[in-house]
Image (cartoon, rainbow, N blue to C red; front, top):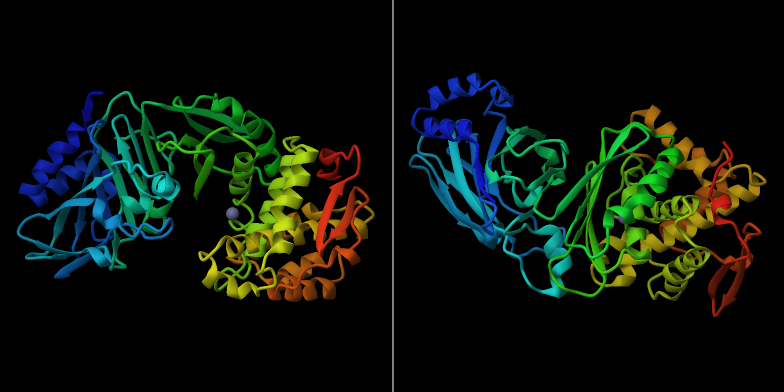
Length: 508
Ligand SMILES: [Zn+2]
């Protein structure tokens, strides 16, 4: 790869250091997006990579806004438990007599300004791959991975946090980058490295950047929305083909489900982990798309992750309860998981055996066996990372309730309505309200169009928030399901020749 140098920016930078006022004039004369930059409010990032090194260089240009010090923070410990993330930062330098102090334990860079005005801070980011299969999932998802011909960066590993509320927007452009290497920046899929991007500082964690000689980036359409599929030639299977059922059936089904056809674009990326390891996957959702890193075949578990994550656009994304911690994750995670299954079934991407396995082995059995299954919803967050029982609790509790709730709506309406009718009304009511979050009152009010409000309110309090288990011994389900109880654990099977595709569909 021959590194490409953005010559206009280079000359600009040269002049900039020497004569700031002339540089401002040149900035205006470039005629690009750069002319709009107001440094009092903007952070301007210039990134350089030669395509073969494990390190990138970053120049941050900013106005110190007459402050004597500016404090920056690098990296994020969460998600992924990256306690050592500050160690990848090297060669931090400030220009024109300013001095800096680093506080690694706080991930903090303090710049002491000798003069006021436009400033430049330089740093390098070392994205060397860490070979450690035990930590490969969080490391390869939440740290930069930079090696010859391939770069993966997330916003929190590139852009700095500041202690100032003055900076509202940031820009990013590549000054040096490898030619003829596929490039993708998640906020603007059609962009090139040399096109400066403007990003709201609050959205900086939502940015994903790839370069890769191995990348295959294809554009599809779901209704009128462009969908980008990013895969890798390193894979032993043709992942673009594996994604076809999603692009042709599942993604259209989710948009039909919500009657929501308007979106700028969406992307999914499925990139193999560099660490060699048994079949696994991890994911990272950002505005506009979802990135999966994985090893092994694209099996049911991975299809389920992709369906779950891309469904989050609506549940948890558009429809989000105002909450202190994880007390409404029964909805954000559990309902979302059930709707992912709903649309997989409607898309004929889920066999009857897979449905039974998911309902029983991934939900009912582990949940009814869990020693913490009756923990109150507002106690989950503090224990969440301590073990898998807490991690799965909201998912399973919410999934099982959504399944029950769907059955109750079907029974009460003689099969004319189901959970989709409820969610569509909830979505439409919420959009009209212009509120940021949904509330329990709105949930109950909409549910009361299908079921008695008092029942729903009681179930939210007792079963979903306080954690009391649903008693399937005394619950009626649609005749497609057969329930047996073994040692207090409900086991739910489909009747012979059950038609999931027909069941998970709607009449209007
Ligand atoms: Zn989720």
